[in-house]
Figure 1: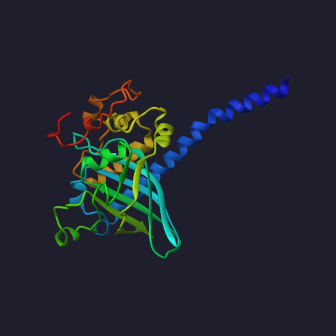
Figure 2: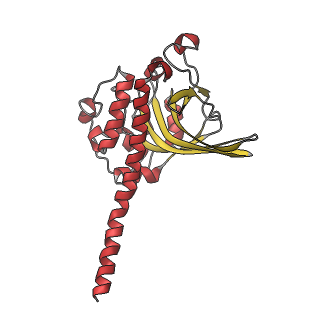
Figure 3: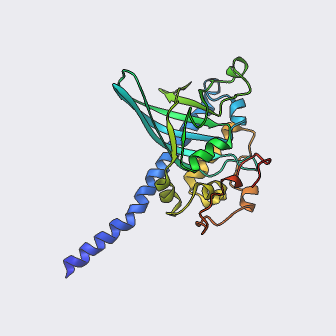
Length: 265
């Protein structure tokens, strides 16, 4: 009888520890993304141009994207995505997955950090509603590097998405045409403690509704973009605080966030 009790206690302990283990993995992903953004601050002449970040609707950071090549190439990584709110602050992060392939003779493996800068809400809508294929559903270009690049490139930044990679501590533009970006709903559920939480609920929730790792990421990104308030989770965001629990309706509310006030809701 005692053996059964011990076995049951161990089983309960394992089940209780499961969500914590999963959540710690997501926290590590957010912390890695925070480190990548922090590196942008340390090398302004070799990072994403401030003029591009100031026009960004959303930013995705994907640490340690693995690219394998044995004849055909494959790329996969997991990261986070934030969108700009109506008060010009950044939202809480939602988790995403990047997958893609390439054709041509390749051999070997490589790990790089990826940053995607989204110019339009349409691109983010594609991710929240299923999948966005870069180059097909949204035009993508390897992003210009550094402050001096703003004068040498098209200052209007006409592409919908700009892509960057960091390898050996240096940032560079990278071609990601054909790669797909999807929501990592399992990671969202583990991090925010709700199996039914949607990306829209994450984006519009108050900053203090997120774990501390998310707040740190948002604050570092805010420091990088400079023109934004230092604590996006407070003030106006707190005034709009909403219940993060899932709503009964399954109708997408993706148009409830963003800066484009001309769109109809």
